[in-house]
Length: 165
Image: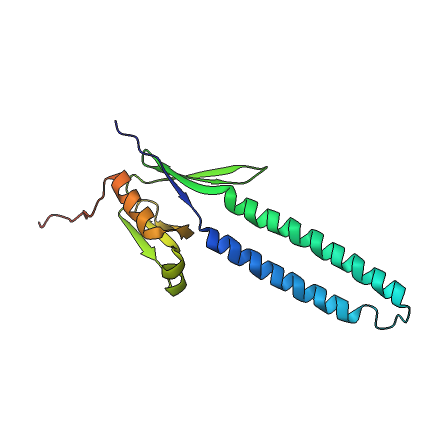
C-alpha cells in the first residue's frame, strides 16, 4: 500500500499582510494618543515621560502581536494521508480536526489577481457525502497543492460519470 503524506501550509504572504495591517492600526491608535495626551500639561519633562511610556507600550505591544501572528501561521497546517485530511492548529492548546476524503468529487482552486501574483489562494474540496464544502483559505501555491491532492487521492483528471440507462 502506497501511503503518501502531503503537508499543506497557509501562505506566509497573508501572515505578513495581517501583521502589517495590525501594526498600522496600532500605530494610528498610538499616534492619536500622542496628539491628545499632554495637551493640558505645560511641564515638558512630564510630557516627555508620557511619550516615553507610550512608546514603550507601543513597542511591547508590537513585538507581542508580531510573535502571536507569526506563531499562528507557523503552527497551522493541513496533513493529507490515507484518504483523510487533518487540520492541525495551535501552539499551547493543540487542536486537530479530520475530514474524510474518501468520496471527494472535485477540487477547485480560487485565486484573485494578487493571489496569482503572490502565489496564494483558496482550495475548495467538494464531497457530496459531507453535504458541504471544505474550504482551505490562503493556501500557499494552490495550483500545485490541488494537483498533489488529486494525485494522492487517485483522481488525476478523471471524473465520475454516471452510466446511461
